[in-house]
Image 1 (cartoon, rainbow, N blue to C red):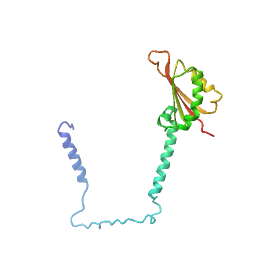
Image 2: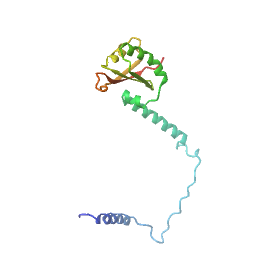
Image 3: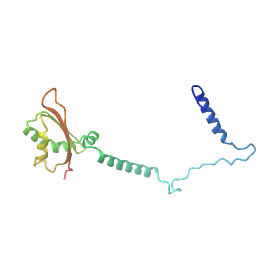
Image 4: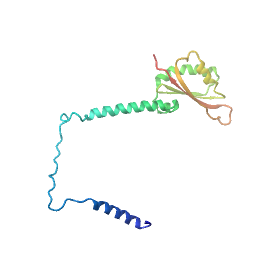
Length: 172
């Protein structure tokens, strides 16, 4: 059977009609059960049903667990992008970065920290500054991992903006 054009709504209507005809309402004269009366039971009457507060606490715990699992799967840059400003990490990391980048001859740079992840945005000819940070004795132990993101040349120059994000270790 082919259904086309205007006959499609008619076919749908016929299908619904056939489905509704399968349902047989009660026969006239038959006795239907009395309508069910619903009475709200006090919360202490049904101990198996958790309270709203309990359900909310369980939901919050589940959200916390899911966020933790998601955080483990994100890259450092993705975690940085989702994080909140962290002045304490900025204070801990900035003086070291200033010293290392000054020694590398880099004057154009930015630092931003969020949730113990700091991003260094530096304009340089190469990423030697990143090697200097990773080998610096004073920096050793202050971060546990990092991710470098190479940039693009700045207005036809040899220099380019590169980024690196560092996962700082918690303060002792």
